[in-house]
Image: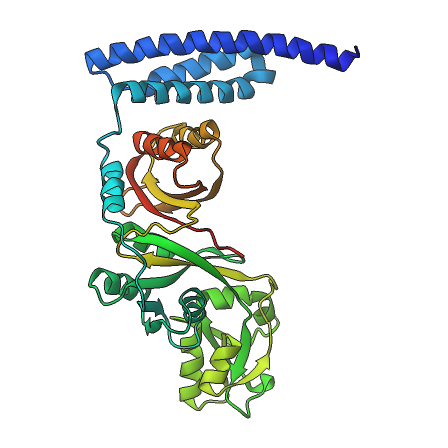
Length: 384
């Protein structure tokens, strides 16, 4: 038997001891939970946990201190989970109740739906709506992102198709903020590959351009190309295709727009430069938003939002939930909470199949661990 095998046997022997000691520790923490339940004491004692972590780190010495603190953060998160289950905390969490009510009133997909998007014909959002729903769906462009949410709330639309992140420039913050404000659900997603073109009226030339119009994201995504033309004034607009429409209506050969080749065709513009975005793999992810929950066959992605208490280790405890249940977290985004300095709303997505007990347990624990918890949707992943 070689030396490596001997060392592995030593590790196995130590691990058996560790598992037995962990079982004993959990037995004791269960009794602690029973006592807290009988006395009406909260599960979390932040000062106590801070002191425990400090003491355990000191016992380990400087070399192992960070690793031991991480180890005990996980152990203590598991202990809190055990105690919360014992005490029934979170069962009446408003977010859990809201999710159950949404499941009970979930609707079937709407046939021949009314679909809205932000922008005008030729926008990438319109392309996303066509890709997801097909040509048979009636789609209408609205001026602002919030107009789409209002149309859903007021029953003027069945779905909204909205950009939520771009592979070059990241999250589209307005959408996250509006998802926080409005009671709605994600029921699908799709992607559109972005290939920006510089376009102007027939007869225009690069040498004569003085102003370039596009959505701020379009300008950011073409920053390198635009930096090579420092004399051009960059003018942000509400959307890319609207910029093409405005240039077409202006009659001004010095104005140019950055948007899709389809927009150039729709508005009768000439493309002066193709594919000017610096990331050739530039892709925008769009989400399909509904006023009611839908549960589609093949749903494998769950989207949630929550607020965390402003205390050390709160995010670590959330991450521990996924480690414990073997679930894959695929997205974590944060947005500041208006009027609450240094506090954030978190948007978290993870994968899981309907009927998987681990998913239900994870959602229950998230409700226990976080505040203002909501499930935004459960839908098939579609990021090809």
